Amino acid sequence: MIKTAIVDDNPSMRIALEKIISGAEEFELTGSYEDMQEAIVLIPLMKPDVVIIDINLGNNGSGIDCIRKIKPDHPEILFMICTVFDDDEKIFEALCAGANGYMLKRTSPAELIRALKEMYEGGAPMSGLIAKKVVSVFQVNDSGGWGWNPLHAKKCKTSAQMFETYLPRQTSNDCDRLSRRWLDNQENQRMHSLFASAADARGKDAHAS
Image 1 (cartoon, rainbow, N blue to C red):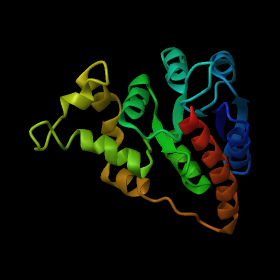
Image 2: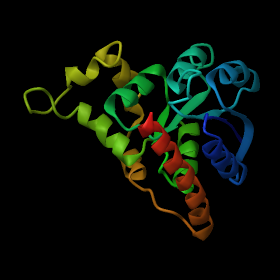
Image 3: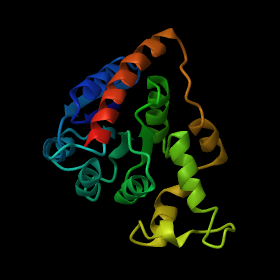
Image 4: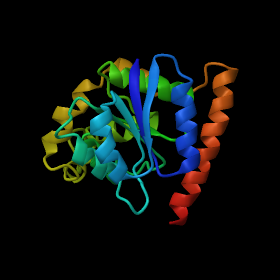
């Protein structure tokens, strides 16, 4: 069983994620937390294999800060960012903090479960749009040609940090899998509706703030 924890301050989203994990074979829900302070205390104690974590945790810190606090002492715990944010700064800040995967909340439940399994097995899954943004960092430089873009690289402490710790785990097959975001069956479609409704509400809250 893949022991899984959830960190999300939005009750509707947290409940949706709990239902997805509880209903998935090979997964066990070990904890569900609404803020960073609770998470940084209980996650090291519960020792989940994977953690699904939002970036925006309200006034009680961020998912990125939570990863920074837990990851150094518990590198074996894998963190999957699950958020509405798809801007470059958030993506690279999360990866540099130690996130092992990055999925958007509009991802279907079926794809989220596949991504968690892939991460647990050693992969580094990302939503298609996120993967495209990461790949573009290495493709277009300031001269309009191909190569490393230092303007993006400065978002990490060193330009090699993300390359050495994250991108080597990506393969062409990973990119193919990352581009798939459809539902497997009607049951997943029903769960997707619940998940999408919570994500839409979360997105409106984020844009309003």
